[in-house]
Amino acid sequence: MEKETMLKEVYDKAKGYELKSGNCAQCTIAAIFEIMGVEDEGVFRAATGMADGVGLTGDGHCGALSGGTMAISYFFGRSKDDFGRMGKQLKALILSKKLHDEFVAEFSTCRCADIQTKQSGRFFNLYDMEEMKAALKAGMLEKCSTLVGKTARMALRIILDEREAEKVKQDELPVL
Image (cartoon, rainbow, N blue to C red):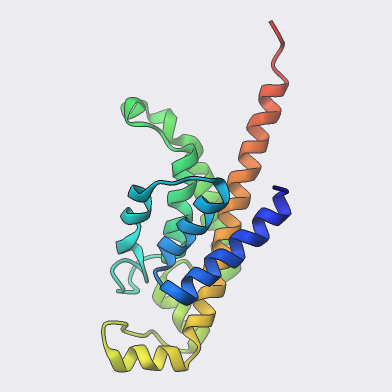
């Protein structure tokens, strides 16, 4: 599949998942993994508690950013065998920082509550049913689903760009 098609599809899938199922972290991972052909229930499940700034608190960074970071780390993170080797995590850290920086450039912050306040004028406590209704009335579902789509697209572009860079480096190696 062509890169631009993949980026459009990941945006559409992530946005659609957020509109239908919620959980920004899982929606981001689900879309990226589908596009990349990855079936890993463990990573998807591990993202569950990351929604809405960790556990629906709004007090952590956006769950979509968490999901994108988890996807980047899935492809470029160090393995358990390399756990004692500090340098093996460097690529995932650099690429995750790149995602973070792009996310902050796009949304002015990475903290969930601050994003909600910027987008809707206030933070919503999603454990309170009246607050949930107010969030829906304020258009948070559409706003968050768009953010999730954009973040999934950012993360996938970083993954695809790095894979392409790695391929170019390998193609430059001499044939023995």
